[in-house]
Amino acid sequence: MPIAGRLTTIISPRLSIAAGLAMFAIGTWYMGGLNQNAGYWNIFWMRSLQGFALGFLFVPLTTVSLAGIPNSLMANATGIYTLIRQLGGSLGIAILELLVLRREDFAQQMLSANVTLSNPAIAEFLRSAHDRGTAIAQLAQQVGINSTVLAYDYAFRVCAILFALSIPTVLLLREPPRGAAKIHAATE
Image 1: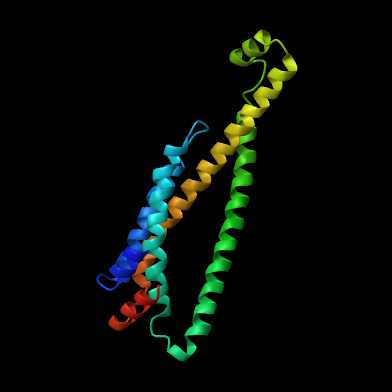
Image 2: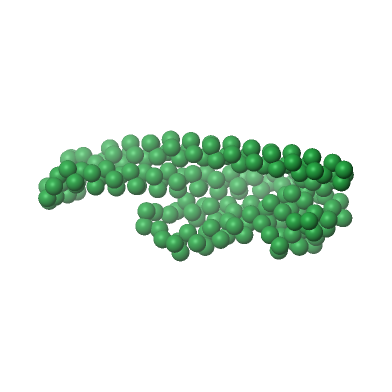
């Protein structure tokens, strides 16, 4: 965030916001390619890119949003800005959670359709199992894990696409007056 705050005084905030959206989209797209065997380092770099991107997104966005607001109205404006940002985030999380739940159900139905005795691998697995009840529980657990991973991968990819599609909307933002970027960057 300190880097983004200083860059706001040098480059156009719209460019910084677009770069933040693009970096976040890239990190989120790659998060959508994980599987159940992903470890710490598979996630670390993508999450680091996303965190870095948020600095380039929120600092200039705040600057652009609050530019031109008189100091006497700044407290009210920042309150409304924060409220809208929090409501938007909460609504987005709720929509993504619904998307994950629906996609998980869909993936579980698709995966379960192949876990039958007519599948030679499943029939052999159950035939060679010492305890058939435990083997069935293992299969059900594996289907559940895989369907959850597929659902989150789908949600990450949807988020990446939405972030990428929102990049052109940055052109709709007005450039703040030159002095406003310096004032807001100093307060961040």
